[in-house]
Image (cartoon, rainbow, N blue to C red; front, side):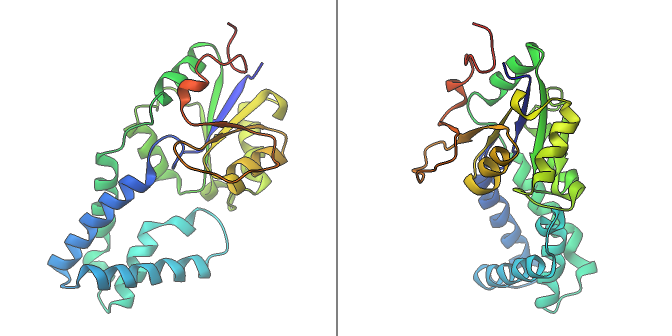
Length: 232
């Protein structure tokens, strides 16, 4: 019987791509109005700014820092970051968070895990502050026990330390823990490599075959009464 469950966040608990699309559109509107830079041009520079940050940094949560992305894109545009960077950061994340909703069955599944005495952790490649905000917006903050971020470990999934620290916080051996994630290489392979049973949340995607021993699910309703987690 599984005693602890670890969840990825982005793309696993909610639709990251949909919220990023909304946030980027609002950011582009701000830039057009205040920096007088057209959306197409800004997006080109923003892509380059992301590339620069990710090239300069080798690992860890700062790879995903929107503050660094905003700072770098403003530098590329020849704009003073001190005049705009905080507003741009807030516009992106505030609009990102507004429409966030958990995937169908997520809340019910996690609540049932909690009610039946399971310990629950988050394991995510991101900076901690925004991930705490996301968990709160999703209405899950009272259901989650621990979180591990790549900011905390200094390394990204599938680095073993991400999963091993999650196990340490849960205080269970790997064979008593399950992991839910949406990416094959980072989540599923990373969990499997340390002996955690992986559940691959594929939603409506067509995914490649894999030799990794995992359970593919398209909805959390598929596991809400699973014998892997609950006595039936």
